Image (cartoon, rainbow, N blue to C red; front, side):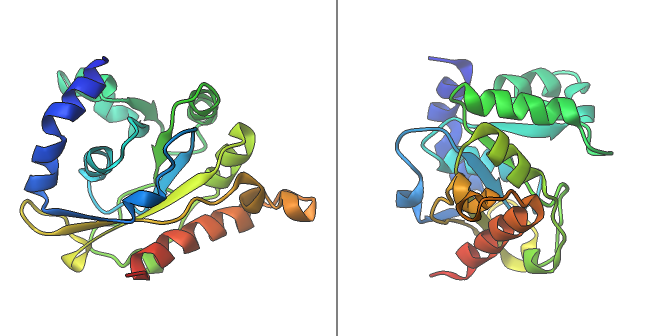
Length: 200
C-alpha cells in the first residue's frame, strides 16, 4: 500500500470532519477505469477535500512554487501532487497529465486555472485544457461541484461536494459529430460542474 493510500485511510475522516463535508452523488464515481476529475476551485483545501471524498486515489496539479517549500513540497508530492506553471500554457504538465491518465491514474484538475475564493463559480472564467487532456488521453470526465457559504472555505464550515454523472470523451471532444472542439468541450464540462451544484 502506498504512502498516499495509507495516509488517506488514516486521515480522510479527519479532513471530512474538519470541513464538515457533505458528499452527494458518490454513486456517480465509476468503480473502475480512469477518468479526469474536474471541479470548481474555491480554496487551497480543495484537493484534500476531493481526495477524502473519492474512492480512487487521484493525482492533482499544484502550482510549482509549492514544490519548493520545505517539507510541504515533499509531502504533497507523496500525496499525488505534481507541478504546473500557472503563468502560461504548461505543455510539460499537460503531457504528464495525459501520461498519468493513459497509465491508469485518475487526475484532479480545476478548469478555472486558479482559486476563485468568494465568487460564484457560475460567474467565473474557465480554460479549455480539460477538454484537450480528456481528448488526448481518451478518458471520460467526472464533474464535481464544491460549495460552501459565500464560497469561502473555513474550518468547521459546511462544505458540500456534489459529484455529477461522468461525461464521455466522445461527448466532450465532439467525436459524435466528427470534429474536435475543445472550447465547446470545456464549456460543456464547466456547465456540468455548475449543474451538479444546482442538483439536489
